[in-house]
Image (tube, rainbow, N blue to C red; front, side):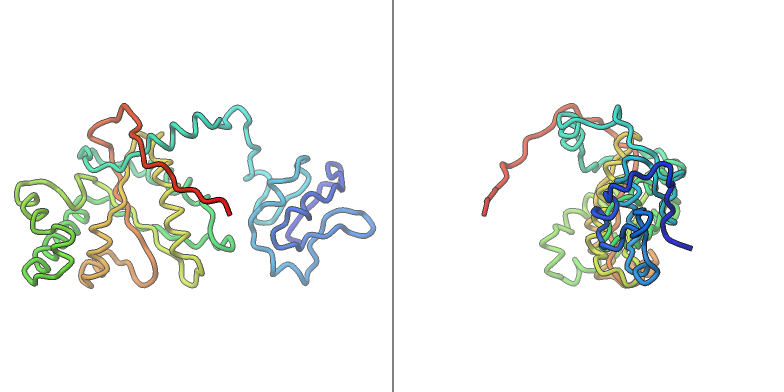
Length: 272
């Protein structure tokens, strides 16, 4: 079975799909002039769906991108630059969350959107771990607090750099400086053998945090938790992270809403 199917009634033989193909494996049949992928080239296909996306006539289907699962881009939903700029500038790292649990359906929605993030060689190898149980999240927080106390007692240089003594004082006062009150922790991790696992994970989490905003959710990249998993085998094992690259993100409902878009430093730009 060929990877692509052509509707001869719609195909205009314009060669756009072949020209667009990143792997350069789509050719035009010498007789029908229809696009084809020869059997010897099929293994080189990266299953990206570019050929389906670029055809202006809806004449081409790919095994991995059937038309029924490839909706047309709706022009009335395309954002202009002003809308994009406000949307991106409105993103904040949330460090105070409400205790309200995040609905499982919303978590699935977030990951459904994040799976469309680009991955190296279209590997689509990002995997997701979701800690949405209060008991589990509380156990992770307690283990990280114990680890912080341990490296403070050991006078580990990192403890001073990250101000763990002060953070432990806040914890003692009832301030959650590990999860910031977030009820959910989502970890993205690179799939086995992924050549660009680090980049894939970071881009996928960027997609996820942007998708969270329209759902009323907030996020924060969990740096302290990441460091803890790197230096504490017990925390890493408890979170079942395994080998390879991963990064956790806190997710929940923000305690406060934001009204303005703070200024950032001017970019340094060099044209070569």
